[in-house]
Amino acid sequence: MSITVHQFPCLSDNYGFLVRDDASGLAACIDTPDAAVILRELNALGWKLDLILNTHWHPDHAGGNAEIKAATGAHVIGPAEVERIGQAPDRIVAGGDIVALGETRFEVIESGGHTLGHVAYYAPAGDVAFVGDTLFALGCGRLFEGTPQQMWDSLQRLAELPDDTKVYCAHEYTASNARFALSVDDAPALKARAGDIFAARERGEWTVPTTIGLEKATNPFLRAPALAGRMGLSGAPDHEAFAAIRAAKDSFKG
Image (cartoon, rainbow, N blue to C red):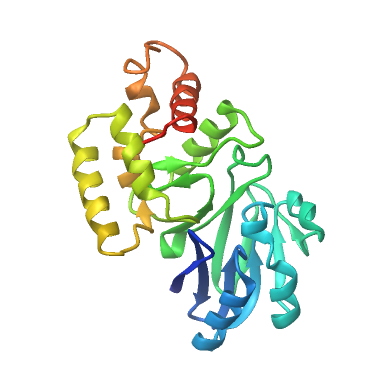
């Protein structure tokens, strides 16, 4: 059993992802940031789109649902909040559900915080996770709707995945995230990674996907407990240390 992931840039800083179950030939689209680009990529690949898997309701993630569904007949699967863009998913899912794409099984992981009903999709057979705007390379999503406790709990669910899991996040924010990370953490592993990121972006290279193990080692939002002392919060609950780092990022100007 195997899957193929096709990644491509969309809009100003989004990534689009098409996933093919190699046994059946069926494909899924992870979110719909740009319908025209996604349909163009599908046509170039010659893949048959069976599913649209939404992570959350924001227009740069679900705004292309109707156009792509009309063109392909694909079924839309996502959290109930996707109805906020004007049309409910064909199937509503939440944490703990399973979505089948041919022989590939995606585990739905509750990952609210950026939005209340945000979910991620994890395929154990391919060691891949599509995390939307919950976890980024060296970052995490803004808390537009949820609480620090909710987001911290969501990040911990993702951190429990195997370290070699490839993490496909939805935006190319990594260089900006690295500059912030260096302002709150001086770990040698982070400094080395940041240097690699800056060099890669200078060459025009993508920094997505990342891995769970790499994020656990260097991402300040996952390292919040270890950084609590630097934030003046020694002994504070983990979610409070996370909240302090998130607030610092929200006001960071670097």
